Length: 455
Image 1 (cartoon, rainbow, N blue to C red):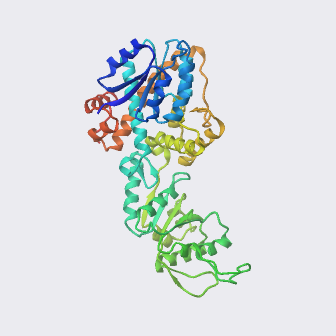
Image 2: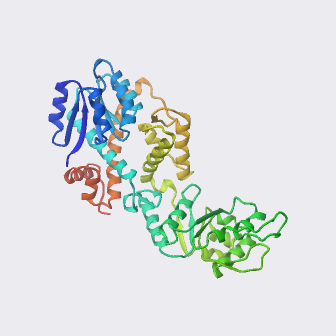
């Protein structure tokens, strides 16, 4: 089945040239002006559209094209737009991208160049559609966790195995990697998912209150205890408890936690009755508990009790294939929550995202995108919006800028192909279907970018 392409072009000769040159690859629909284009766009059936900025009633200016771009962001936020501009109208192309266009192609049209841009744009649309509707780890998502990198796919497998047992899980990883999300995934995938997942941060509660929070207390147990209180462990009975920052748990409470693990019982503070519980324990830390145990800062016997199923969440820098996937996902979620419509990243922003070291991991990535949305109302997010430095190019560097755009297209094409192959475990037929292209074309792209699929 051919992919649907909408061509918005008022010059009959150009429209005829495009239909003739592209009808083998695409199912072409032509609209001669904005009025005719709007019903087609509103139908939501066109993944990609080309747009000549010079449209009636003022074909010699780009104003009608700009107005239509603004409407497309509302009518068809998922449609990718390639603007057609005059050869000397670089500023119009840049403004169009600022209004949400994905790419541009200059007149006089070179069909070879346009075909490359179209293929890449359809590929991006297909991947974004797959990411908008993730279901299992095979398509880049598992119980709320997102990623296609080899590193995160290993985590997905460990999570799936861990969810089939009731053993304790010790989740380790640096700050911001997503340890709490991993705990939620284990619970969601387990047979306990109809019952509560109760979370407590052991490092956020004062030591003199933590025991009561964990195990509850009886009336009169201490000054101010005017009634019985149920602790987190009782609240999690038949479900799961997640002990975040377990390394901050004071030594006296480590002894009581060890008893819970050994006997599945607790006693409320100030009480004498032993309470039998059925609770699965998940714990997380960003410190080395084994080393802490050697230094006497954490009980060794408790460490081994908790570390039945160890699970390490990798840093974002160890899963580079996921950076843009996560960034686009966060941008979509946050912009939707704010009612901002369809937003995108500038090419330089994409380069900044992929080259940053990410010491704050996924949390830093999400916060940078929130920062951008909180500081700009533009449709295109720049490096400056994200808190990165963006060097302004001088007029003498403009040629280099244009060559960089070409390189960016090549890089984006390679990244899209690699992501599709990763999603489909290097299955050529499935990847070609995901990218909405043919197997021979995908083989050509694999050869072009020297992608090794034998691993």
